[in-house]
Structure formats: structure tokens, C-alpha cells
Length: 123
Image 1 (cartoon, rainbow, N blue to C red):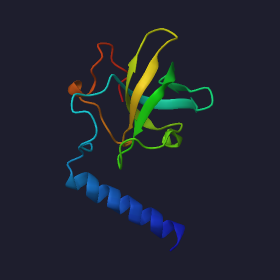
Image 2: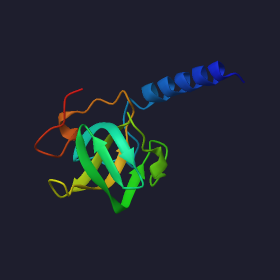
Image 3: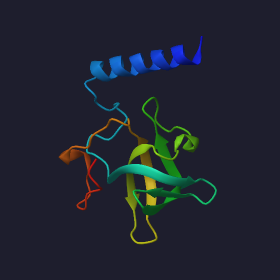
């Protein structure tokens, strides 16, 4: 199968599944929203630091990454330019991400999808 054919099949499947589930997130995603939502600017798994929307966060030792296809996925899936929702604790230079969810690039946050009082940048 050619690369173009695989890409086309993936695109069609994604569109069909998106329409079929009404654009909703999987059941293993939080129904009460995320602390923050943003795009990953940089990630360094060796230092456990990630920059999201120009803010530096530290991945906690027991951080859990959830993908659309499964909960508790590999941190290797966390890459630059990925849209994510996440829960964190701390402030200033001690912001620790406890859990992170990969979001579809087309995901648009609603008022209920962000728990924090200071909202991330609009999309």
C-alpha cells in the first residue's frame, strides 16, 4: 500500500469516527475538564521538562499520559506541536504535571473543559 493511500485511509477513518462520536473525547478522558489546555512547544524527557504555551512544567515522576486510543500510554507520544489537556500542581518554577491527555488537533475547548480560573490562550 502506498504512503498516499495509507494517509487517505487514515484521514477518512478519522473523519468518520469524529462524526460518529460527535467529536466527543473517549470515556477515559475527564468529564470535568482539564486544569489547562495548550500546544506543546518543547519537550525534553531526559530533564522531564515540557513547555506548553510558553510555560515551563515538570513531568512528575508518576505522570500518566493518555492518548485517544488508550489510557496510560507512552510518554514518547508527547511531541512538539501536539495539543494537550493536563492537570498540574504547584506554581512558579515548580509546576508539576500529574496527568496529560493528547487531544485532537481540531479540539476546541468549551467553557466547561477548563477547570482553572486563568484561561489559556484562545484557539
